[in-house]
Length: 127
Image (cartoon, rainbow, N blue to C red; front, side, top):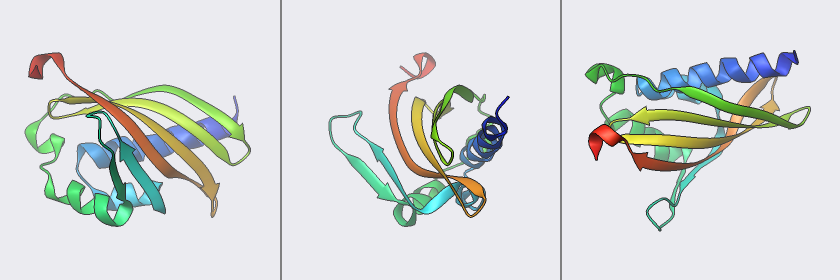
């Protein structure tokens, strides 16, 4: 197996844990400082830089604090070259189920998320 695959999986574990614990210190280990965050599920563009996204994460109650069941899943990892990859993942926070498209670049010896573009649906138990 390509060793890059396990490196991306390790980065995704940090990502999932960071979201579940609302821990921006963990998330900062996997997001590039210039990464973007975008969604258009509701028909308007939600867009953030890490400087505006991390305070949102810091302010929300952690799913872990509510003992929410985790729904983390890696759907796919594809490599576009030696230092570029895209991961499609699923997770859930509160009433929303997310599909995240995460673009990774390998810089400074580690895989970092450069963009997070996502879609969400209300979970059946929340509808």
